[in-house]
Image 1 (spheres, one colour):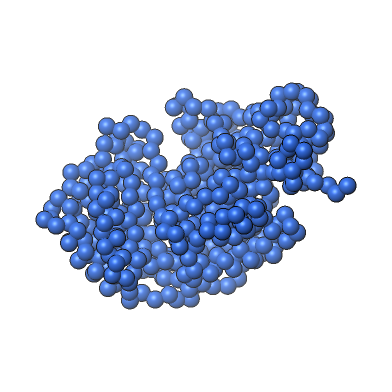
Image 2: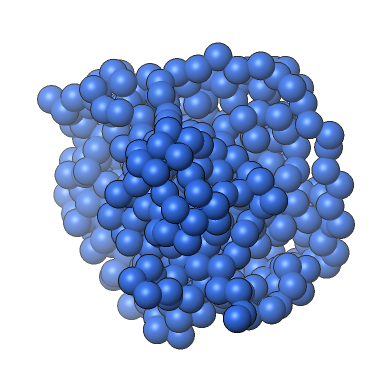
Length: 475
C-alpha cells in the first residue's frame, strides 16, 4: 500500500497525512509509534508539546491528546551553529533608485493621515486624484494619532515616519488635522531633512478648503514622480518581507520552507529578508538564536522574544494563546508546532540584525523585526522596516494586501485553484513532486516580475491597508 503520510525528520514520532484517512483530514498528524502520557511529541525534529493520554500508532494526534509545553520568559545560552552557505540568486530588476540609495519597485504617491479624524479626507483626496490618471495615489488610514500615551503614541509616529521614507513612495502628502497629539510640528522635526519636492505637508484646520489645497499639492507631486524612470538594479537591492497567515498542516512543508530557500539565496546575493511575527517564534526561538551573527545579535534576539512574552504576561494572557481556530482546522495543534513551521520562512541564513518596531533596515541579510503575528499589523511592520514586497504564505487563503505589494503563496494546490483571485503562486507543487530548487527558481522569477511592475492579485483588487500596533490605553 502506498504510504499516505510524510515523516518530516528521522526523530519525529508523528507524520503528516497528505490525503484524508478515515476521519482524519489531510494535513493533520498521526502517531508513527505508541506514545505514552506525558511523552514529548516530536515534529520537524523538535518537541511540539506533550501527550495528554496514551496514543497508539496510527491514531490521530491533535487537540484532544496533545497540549503545549510552553512557559513564560526563559534564559538562553548562545551556542552558535555552523554558518550555512546558499547558492546566491543572479539577475536584476527594473526599479526606481532613490536619492538615499534605496530602491523602489513602485512609484506611487501616499497620503498619510497623522490622525484618524482626517481619514475620510485622505481617501477623498486619493479618489479624486486617481480620476485624473498618472501616478497612482493611495491613502493609508488608521484610527490613531490622538488620545494615545507613551509607547502607543511613539509607535504611531514611528510607523508614519518610516512610511514617509519608504522607497515605493515617489511622493508623500502628510495630512494633519491641527489639534491632534501627533502634531505636524513635532512630526516634521522628527522626520528631519527631506526632499521638499517629494514630501509635502498639509494641516486641514489651517486652510479654508483642504481638498482643494491637497489637489494642488498632488498635482505638483505627480509632476515630479512622472519624470522618474525605472533603471536596471542588482538583486542585492531587493528587500523582501516574510509573512504567513491562515496556516495549515502543509505550511511548514511547502510554502514556508520555499520562502526559506528564497530568503537564503537572496541574502547570499547581498539582498535583505525581514522576518517578523515574534509570538510565532515561541518554541522555535532556539533555532534562530543559534544562527545569530554574534553575541550582541543573540542578546537582542533574547530581548525580542522575552519582551513579547512579558507583554503577554503584563496583560494577563498566556504566551501560548495560539494557534487560531483556522490553524487548528488545518492541522496545527500547538504554538510550538506553528512556530517551527513559521520560522522556516527565514531559511538557514545567519541572523544579521534585530529591528525595533517601525525601524528601517540598514544591514543586508536576514533581519528579525519586532511585530505581532496579526496579519495586517505584521505586514505593516514589515513595510515600515523597508520591505518593497511581502511574500505571504497561506494554507487557508486571504485577500489581504499591505502598502507594499503583497504576494500570496498557497501551501496547497486545492487552495490555489479555488481562490485564483487571491493567490499569486502555488507552493503545493512541492507535494506533487516538484523539487525545492525548481520551485525556488520559479517563485523568484515571479518575484522579479512583480519587482518590475507586474501587479499582485491584491494590487489588482485594490486591497491595501495598514494597522498600527497598540498595547496601551486610549484616552
